[in-house]
Image (tube, rainbow, N blue to C red; front, side):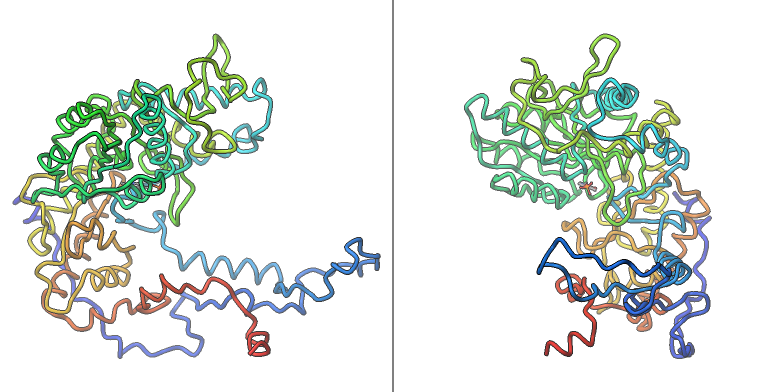
Length: 523
Ligand SMILES: *Cc1c(COP(=O)(O)O)cnc(C)c1O
């Protein structure tokens, strides 16, 4: 650790003299162009193409036929291409630089995956194609399922959930079906304080009462508090492992045993599987259901909320209640077991979650990723992800407060708090400063157990050089926030937009455009 500190790059002078930057006439900044809305650039009166005058025909819609234009902007092909290209340049992406969002696993997405996902046999698939014509596709789903079951040491896997949160829903529905099948419907789900926000949301969505379990001072589930709360009304405990403080729940097996002894089930949020893939099998820890975010651990570009896939691995106890459809191997062929074809093994299925089976684009990417890494490679992924996070933790814990830094190494993400910043300086100031330094901000104010949390997940795909540059930027910002550098409160200075009103932007987003002339006429 000392060696790391000695080798640390020093922070440069920060550039913040905003007053020195003159505004340009266009609003552009060097090659970063100010961009209006497409409705403001184009006009309904112009068009990018010249069509021959359409013959007048009697509308079959009668008096329902539209009499006015619909106000779509007319632009030439070049104008349209430029508009969207300029917008795309205002977007930060993992292909541009390090994306430190904690709990999101923004790793490099190998291009090989993209190539395979675009093969016409996968990409042009029709969900109603006869099963005999898509045997290869079903084989891919089946092989991926086998890998997931093997990597987790679980009994089976439901492949249809379309995201992590959807997987949570699948797991809880299976748990509810299992409890109801034994005539023991229960009403409470216990969720530790450090849980991901989707956990209590899913439990509440399923109609359960959600109760918090406190965290210990070292950021883990309070085992005694959990044991004390277990009882005949508790249906399940939802635990994120590794948890959102970036720590491994060491007592997991003891927790599972206690939960099972109380007749309840263990749901594990496995979205952070990246940290333990190939090293820990949740099945060995007594987990009954766990979603795996294929788009995180097994790579798929998922910025901006999608696409995703959240298969749920299930224990033997929950397997009979898994949702349909299900891919099964029958002799030499693969069969998609649906309601009509389900046999007694699937008679207790809780039902169906989606119209069509699975997210083929994510399945092909995930299996490509798994096969190109192999079992040893996946193990290495987890090791490198954890190493990178610890490098960040130990390179910054002298300038940023690491609330659980004393309790040993972290897993795949490093957690800092705002403790020690100068009066009036916040996590938000540091996040905005990071934008000026050319980085997407880390996850902020989450997990809630830490004040002003900054959660940094570098992933295994960043080089040491990239990590050092990020550390240098964050170090410089931490030093400025501790020294009370007022200029930091004005950041970002160099982004297309300055500091927005975060609350207003979240509570009153303006998502539609009204022609100012029409708006005025309406007043
Ligand atoms: C990302 C994440 C989720 C939710 O996954 P989605 O695919 O976004 O629905 C749940 N739990 C944890 C810990 C996560 O990191």
